[in-house]
Amino acid sequence: MSTPFTEPAKKHLGQNFLHDRSVIDKIVQAIAPQPGDAIVEIGPGQGALTFPLLKKHGEVTAIEFDRDLHAPLQAAAREHGTLHLIEGDVLGVDFTALAAQLAPADGRIRLAGNLPYNLSSPILFHALEHAAAIRDMHFMLQKEVVERMAAGPGNKVYGRLSVMLQAYCTVTPLFVVPPGAFRPAPKVDSAVVRLLPKPAGCIDVQDRVRFANVVRAAFGQRRKTLRNALHGVAGTALIEAAGLRPDARAEQVDVAGFVRLANLPAED
Ligand code: SAM
Image 1 (cartoon, rainbow, N blue to C red):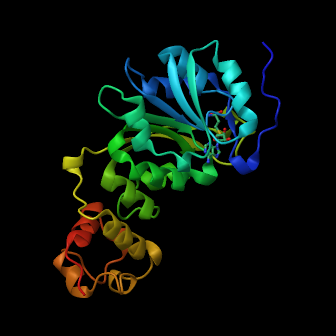
Image 2 (cartoon, rainbow, N blue to C red; image 1 turned 120 degrees about the vertical axis):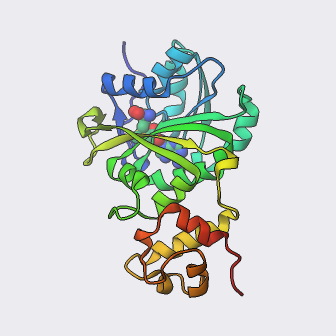
Image 3 (cartoon, helix red, strand yellow; image 1 turned 30 degrees about the horizontal axis):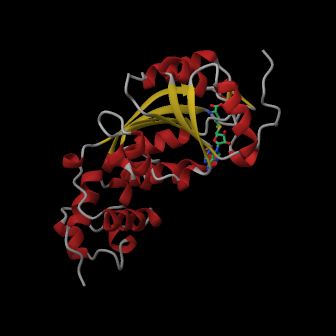
């Protein structure tokens, strides 16, 4: 069958299109759509994941920024199921409002996507803002990013992304995908990761903004001691009150330690 997609891949939109059938099948199996689920795909591109998801589930909402892809996607989707295409920037999509609109049984959407790698972190932080409206997320990202997301203290790639995500979600790397699975092939390995937002009662962070500020400052200069890196954000007494050593470095502090510190009332 001839393809309706005629435009070449756009590098500035992170377009690396998946073509490896076995990888696509593994992602769909990992998502395992169930009747009544509201599946929301970020960056459907030329439909590599969208169409198999439509075949399995019948209905998918997808958010695509590239206007050259909108008409061909809609046209090609028809034979597979019902595609609701949101034409625009995923960072402008209010997932909480979308969940209310799609109204799945448990009120939460399921996010999936082979993400544009240049926007991975902004998309992850955007999703975190709406974590209460999201049941789970299955994302393809650079392998190195997935390693950072899942790392624990003491690991050299443990950092702000690890702490911020793990405070709100359970992070499970699923499998690695080689460059040859995409066209054009990226220069790096990729990996698929599952994020399960924690139920509200299991999130210990009391003030999200304060927590984000403490973590940002602590890792802003990761070679510095907490005492120095947190200057102006949390003093020595507060660091000690949280059970942390002021001469420790951020990379040695676990997620619970950052949560305890951010939960203490800040000094004047
Ligand atoms: N899902 C397709 C696949 O697996 O072949 C395409 C994946 S490609 C890595 C990323 C997709 O995200 C592209 O289609 C790109 O146009 C789209 N994209 C880039 N920036 C976006 C944004 N800000 N909002 C929504 N989609 C975006």
